Amino acid sequence: MGKRIILAIDFDAFYCGVEEKRDPTLVGVPFIVYQKDCIATLSYPARELGLHKLGSVAAAVRAHPHVRLVNGESLAPYREQGKQLWSFVRAALPGCTVERLGLEEMWIDVTALVESNLAALIDADVLFKGISEEVADGLDQGVRLSLTTTAAPEATAGREEFNYSDNEENSVAAPLEMSFLCEDFFFQTPAHVFPASHGATMPAFLQTESTDPDEFYLDFKLYIASHIARELMLRISLGLGYSCSVGVATNKTLAKMVGSLHKPGGLTVLVSSAVQEFMAACHVRKVPYFGAKSRHILQDAMGHDTDRDGDLRVESVLSRYDRPEFVKLYPPGQGDKLWALLQGEDNAPVRETSRVQKQVSIEDTYRELTSIPRAEQALQPLLESLLRQLRIDMIDDDGAWLGFPTVLRLAVRVATGPSTLSNRVSHSHTLTSFAPFYLLPELETNNELTKLAERMRHSLIVPMLHKLCVGQGFRLTGPGPIYFQLLNVAATGVVAHKPVITSAAVKPAPVGPVRSAKPTRPSKKLDFYFTRK
Image 1 (cartoon, rainbow, N blue to C red):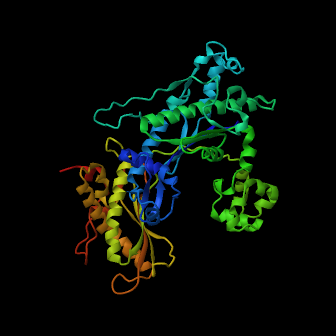
Image 2 (image 1 turned 135 degrees about the vertical axis):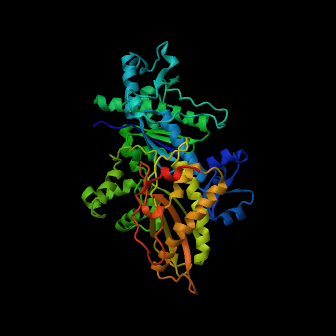
Image 3 (image 1 turned 90 degrees about the vertical axis):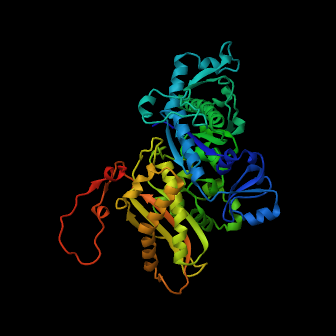
């Protein structure tokens, strides 16, 4: 199996980019997006002041009173924009597999697209005429590169056309142009090249000491991919107004790592022969999947302490251990994976992200939530946020469900003291026993949504909260210390087809003795409840 060509996209200071679109006066000024007293992210002008993520907002304001503050407690606008960006990229590169990582990162497998362009260039008999140092007349006008492959019609079934306009009333949906004129194709890649000594001009980029033609064509594919990546970055900037950084490499891990070298707005391509050189220069903490626990194991084994973590580079690890010795440091299976990553090897495929999410979850943390009644009230805004997010993620533009959540889950962290560590515990309840939930697409006002959230809170969430508290040894009434550290509500158990309302939802069980036996009513489909009277 040949090497794949992967693009890794990371949108620069994404939360800040969203806020700048909402309030253009923020562009070019230092500002902080905060959640409680924590800096969630900050603009690049704010970073130039020496401020950092996860720092204290109060401390930042004391040091720099002119820094503007933006409340980022609600993730709804960021999730909405993240979904829009993902839709845009899928529409811009039909036929390519796009995998989302969080809200603002994506991997794109452009292997088939690049190979299709390479074959077209060879067929047109213009490819090797432009490789020489002296570009022939007529070739300096560039070439037209395609953004779609021959597999695109089948692969793009169900992909939406994209609308450039922010004004929905005056806009007309139209497909993006599926090719572009690459004027500098025969001159140089528009990207930073690692290693820089390799050269960015076409002849220099394609130089290789190997006599294997596959090595030559692999670099040619990376070269073509860099031009496609630049065009994609330009379309994202012009069409949606976001800046992003992109890495181009032969696997997901390398693309993600090399893409971080020239942020913000940088495009970096890793030459195939320079993988070992690139990895050797990296710090272990920059390698995906090397979390704090994995690094601590390595630090202890190598005699490093936390203060000397800056010395823990891939080169020093590889010079200290061979594979069998390294693998013994970790549980079975984990060591092999980490060792491969240190070598720059990653066989994980880019997996198409489903249009329908597996769950939608909303949570918040607390310091002064010290009673069950207060927790009951705190659940109301969480449920409202959950319903709003469901409208973004689970309901299409025509008001139809993309997928049907069937389970409502509540998770809490509750302790006997403000500093006591506690585990997350959860309880679930079926949503198919609460028919009003499935009327969410029909709600037209915020007041209707608030009322639905209130009904769900009283009917479903509060009973679950009481069960969790009792299960953790807390009394529902009376004195006793109780500290809620976290509340989370989630809609899960998503199914593709409309579920059936349970019998219990049609007629609640009677309270008290049963006077007469009645036949059980059959289950009714949700269409029965969707009908307006």
